[in-house]
Length: 357
Image (cartoon, rainbow, N blue to C red; front, side):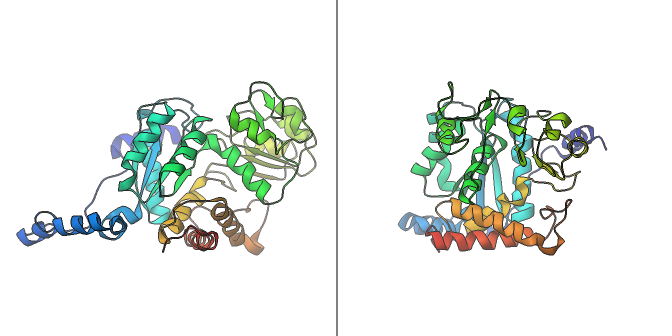
């Protein structure tokens, strides 16, 4: 199937992947008076007395905002906030379909960190959580940090361009020692010129041998490649230089760093992509719906590293004895995924002290 052509046709037919449907039926004078004026004044007064009541008397308890500035959409780059709307709508559909979480897409027309933060903070009282999406680094990290300082609801940065940092932090937390990160200029190491603040921070805990060189140089003798970057950055020849039975996670979307057949031709044993048309789809749809479901279920004030690790372990635990080269992670449509992740995240929130109910 030509996914690009067919998707464009369907988007034209759908005219948006979301619509608002009411939970309260307004089919009589009495129903109108209860859902709206004059009856609606009473829940307003209750929330005025206790803001926490907003979680009980409105949909806030299950409502997430999916917000972007359009500066780093998928692997397409800076295409603008309105052009990012199809992705934001799609993300909202996945929240509801896989986690039962209501989500609303918002595209903010500014690249100024403080303006973006102030905008999101000012609307945060309407939502139970904020999912930041497709914001270019390093702004995405500044925005997340500042919003976490200001807001009392979970702030989660979930997109390709912050994923490399998030993956590396989780790997370090899990005990991995020998990790080298790369950017467009090659290996990241302490002392390299031109690093932004987040890369300087990561350089202190990765590539401790200060190896210098290109991505191709770093792959020589490597066991695993995890790509969340750009299409075609890895070749079959580069895979051949890796250790025997190498593992390739080529997760750039919509086109991976290397396609599975090309990676296997270079000797890779296990290959995954972010696409649904190949085995071992490693896509954030496996995680974020359940993460927010679990966070919302305990009204967590944050989504912390313990909760993220719990989600990863829950996913791994579902594979069990079925583990094989073409099945290293559950499929997106496995009905066990959402509930398992949500349960693990909720438990981790309680253990780490961020659960509020």
